[in-house]
Length: 129
Image 1 (cartoon, one colour):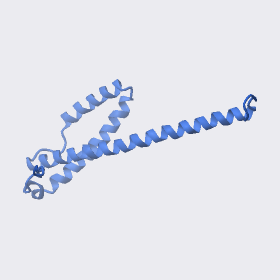
Image 2 (image 1 turned 180 degrees about the vertical axis):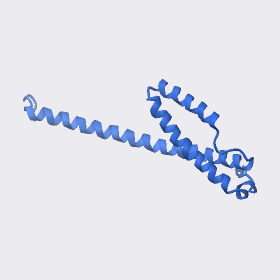
Image 3 (image 1 turned 45 degrees about the horizontal axis):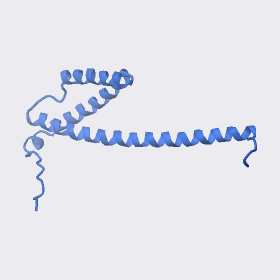
Image 4 (image 1 turned 135 degrees about the vertical axis):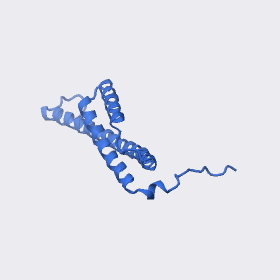
């Protein structure tokens, strides 16, 4: 379209459609980045819960801790409300994660002496020069 001429009716729609497509691509890119961050955060969380499971197995503690779970659910519901996220959704999400963690802890406990006889893993920093 040349300068000084009015856009045709269809041109305004195509400009709006293009802007909408660009915005959609941008938003989807943000969602993809957030999904990647969530996966990495979950992986880190499960690394920690794996260590909790091994500790529980070594000390013959039960795989589940209902009191801790209830406290965490209440805490997460409050966080969700503060973040304007549906607390029921947040609770459902945490319950799913807790269920997975408890299953992992049960599996670790069933390994028995394979876990309890093993020395804990210790990270030794490299010697400084």
